[in-house]
Amino acid sequence: MNFNTALLHKSFSGDPATGATVMPVCQTSAFAHESAEKLEAVFNSKAYGYAYSRISNPTVDSFEKRISALENGIGAVACSSGMAAVTMSLLNILQSGDEIIAGSGLFGGTLDLFKDLEAFGITTRFTDDVTAESIEPLITDKTKAVFTELIGNPKLNVVDVKSVAELAHSRGIPLIADSTTATPYLIHPFEYGADIVVHSSSKYINGGGNAISGVVIDSGSFKWDTSRYPGFEGYEKFGKLAYLAKLRNGIWRNTGCCLAPANAFLNSVGLETLGLRMERICSNALKLAEYLKDVPGIEVNYPALPDNPYYGLVKEQFGGKGGAILTVRAGSKENAFKLINSLRYASIATNIGDVRTLVIHPASTIYTHSTPQQKESAGVYDDSIRVSIGIEDPEDLIEDFAQAAKK
Ligand SMILES: *Cc1c(COP(=O)(O)O)cnc(C)c1O
Image (cartoon, rainbow, N blue to C red; front, side, top):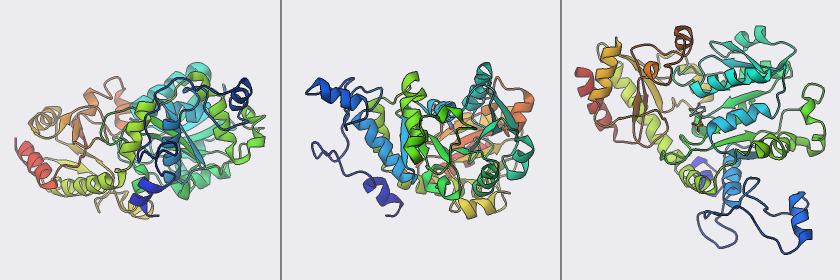
């Protein structure tokens, strides 16, 4: 199956119970069974069925199966938000004393989370760019995960998944990839060696900006050696499914960060048009970037522009597509604000992955609590604007940016 066909038909053929062509919202907390014996069996994973929506629910199940199939994973666990997914992907394997290696240009919420984890004895060593060369000197006996975003937001640095995964594996460490900004339309990270993929499916997968959700997907290929990952003791019997079994029966279920069925429904519906939207969005972004590159007083950053330092990597591992985000430097904060305020079609909002174009001044919003050093590592300057491109007609976007840039 090719990409758009897979979005509709891979691991999904409607609701088996009713024939409904979309999976209906199964809006219930609990599921009743015909006997105490049956509920006992369901509860103990000895029989197929549902018991309680914090643990599993048919609408959520269907979303998990579809997104796992899309990433060519062996299974997925859906979460209440992208942040919950990031948190779960790590807490499932880490314990006090462990270390993470991560890029310093991560999504702000993830950086805040890594700070929060310090109270539990989990520390993070940061590198400006996640490359095999930069992470190697940071590895210690305590390093238990390398965590990276594939296209940094808003830095737009692109990660060579293949070489980073190879280096991490050579030291017995898994690579956890946040593929939110890349999406499965650009890259299937498991093909290049990533072990776990997380998404904030609130963004491109949902597409309409109408429901928060996150998902953790496992490739099933990392061997969780219990001498390095003692929490896996007792889960060896699950074989390849050990990571997912541990997550589902452990920290995910017990922290209660399950995805609401109504939000799973909205995200499943959104998923079906991911390919169409991303095709249009990537094409719009490239056209706008090409236009802006020649506008005096403006500097544009977009990974799929041929003179971008990541262009080769984009062609090699990301299907030649640059994604939806571009950044613009306008010369000063005043110019940046003026440009933002002059745009007619871009909503001034802190989100990405909507069908409509969104624009923000990161330094005064998302990074307002960051130190100058953190801002610089994240590629955030006083005059930077982040644009999340939508599906509007490209002529209208170009015309809008042209008139705003003139002002
Ligand atoms: C938005 C985002 C998150 C967090 O997702 P939420 O759904 O907002 O919790 C994590 N990583 C990246 C790259 C994001 O863009």
